[in-house]
Length: 157
Image 1 (cartoon, rainbow, N blue to C red):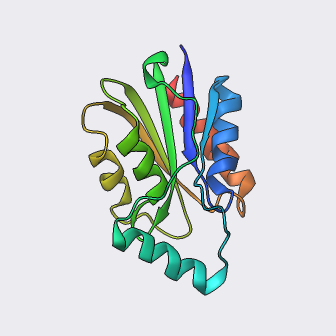
Image 2 (spheres, one colour):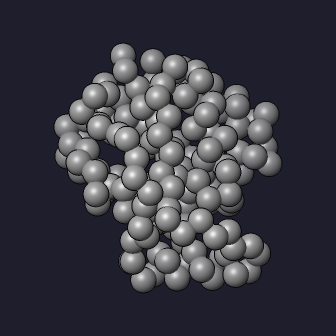
């Protein structure tokens, strides 16, 4: 089975999870990156992120080499921003045709997902979501996250 892990990460949490998943599944790793790579910190990061979600403005993305049709399973990962998938993931899904695919979804969050997973799935209606999971602070809880990722991946196989 040919697998791709396609993800966006702002603080590195989804990068950590995506690399673990990719290693376990021998998957291709595709990182979504925005043109604006300025890192905001602390309170300003929170305000900026909420404004990004509320404005519904999608960021410009750097080009990626990804064709969903080439994969049997596509795993999509995003951080949770203001109870939504990150705008960069929304931008990717608005620009990339993903239809009729078997998908697995993961989200990284700092305390809760709210209805972010439902919003994520609503962007992927022409597909079959076979599994979904949330990882809480994978970088802060790396041992627990690795165990959770290993269990999740076993259930995907």
